[in-house]
Amino acid sequence: MLTLKAAGLVDVDAGTIIRPGIVHVDEDRIVAVGGADKSSTVGGSVPDDSEVIDLGDSILLPGLMDMEVNLLMGGRGENPGLSQVQDDPPTRVLRAVGNARRTLRAGFTTVRNLGLFVKTGGYLLDVALGKAIDAGWIDGPRIIPAGHAITPTGGHLDPTMFAAFMPGVLELTVEEGIANGVDEIRKAVRYQIKHGAQLIKVCCSGGVMSLTGEAGAQHYSDEELRAIVDEAHRRGLRVAAHTHGAEAVKHAVACGIDCIEHGFLMDDEAIQMLVDNDRFLVTTRRLAQAMDVSKSPKVLQDKAAEMFPKAETSIKAAYKAGVKIAVGTDAPAIPHGKNADELVTLVEWGMPPAAVLRSATTIAADLINVTDRGRLAEGLLADIIAVPGNPLEDIRITQQVTFVMKGGKVFRNDSAN
Image 1 (cartoon, one colour):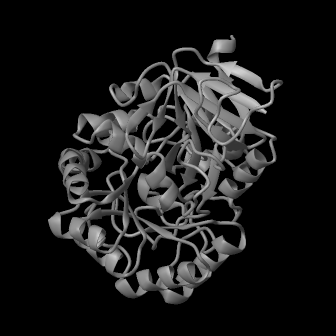
Image 2: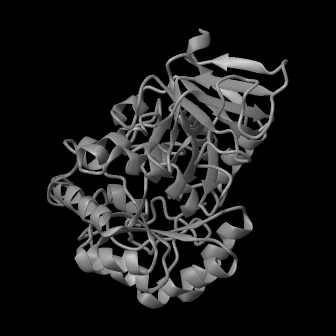
């Protein structure tokens, strides 16, 4: 038995601080929350020999969740301009070890790895990375892997489009996600599911950083989108769609897509469709502030200059309308380990801190369809972090995580140093 003692803990549902912050942990679960000391507790007494970790003036939070990362991209030692043709699968996985550790130490205990779009020979590297973390071989967050992103030839997530390679360079297979027409799409989705994907990622519209035309243009036909959704939903998996344009969002929702990634160019009608159909939006707004496009081709700089300012207005409108918003960073669009920067941006752009914390906890848990995390409550996984202040008053405190526990195991405790 283990008892965490702190100045307070965040009730994310109520948006309040409970003082003092007492959480009792047995193995990988929270067994009780509350009480002034280890012998006075909601849910029953705690043995006298319970180990106590005293975190002083810190505030406890449930482990945060990032609903859009790619741990297999970015990180130390990567040459972004050449990594697509230089980095073999083992190199990517080894670099991802550091990315995963930094993400966990930043207080993010669960992530969705949202779609490989690199040459792997068909291996689902995010599935392998998640298995290694679950086995305890390396430190990292719980990973919900999507395998390879499904995208049409020349779509935003066709890697040849990021560098305008000549024909024949870095061509991917159907198994690696390049799929055209209903038959290929079904095969591509089935392949990801067969090899361990827990959700499906699809490219529904253009994007900023690829040479594929308008960022908001719809890439797949409605028939193709419905095929993706049909294959995933019949197997109990949700579908996340990279989508920027308002019309593309409307078509994605109408075809059954569960979650819109980005949605920078949404209009009021698209936003209302998300509300009416009970769909999710994943934010990725920090990249609109922080992504450096100064060395990109002028056509990409022009797209960024047009789109990024619209990211702020669309997230404000989505929040006001009542869209279910989950936090996502699109790391490495912002660096791995800087995931909390997204929370800061959302508050700066008008969301209340309590709402942002729910977007990174309870709403994220709803998005991945789990009930075992996202709150500090009896029976839930002991995914617990601590920060040196009240995040409901200053969300920037989430950038200063000092303690991380995942599944009852401590991975960071600065007070012990």
